[in-house]
Length: 141
Image (tube, rainbow, N blue to C red; front, side):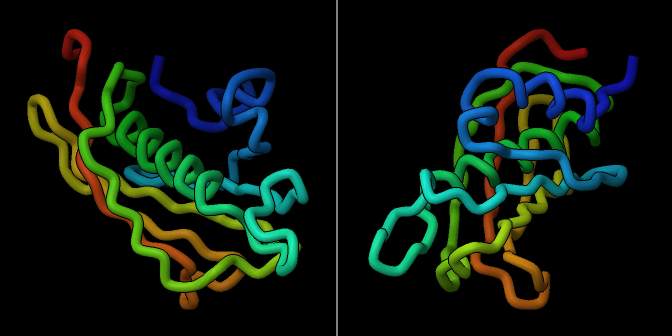
């Protein structure tokens, strides 16, 4: 059975870290996925401004880039985040949903290479860029 990101996120919404953050499936293609992080006062890092904390955005992007690997390879594989660089360009606008797009652009025998961005409504005005590598930790499929 081929990996289905919408089904995976639906199952993950019931429990675990993604459920606590409220991360939702948005869209996907051959080697990419978009996930949504709806605004929640629980996720605010600065109560004076209402700006989201960076942690939920990092989690959103880690999950989006992970799922992009499973989409590209066609199956779920255990993996570890070796490196995930997040360059913040600006704060998210309070009250807006953050959309994270992860893309897996290369897979070798043991390593997957990813990139992505997060925005709050306009992909041409991103709030963060990410790049990184993941290492497969289980038997290769």
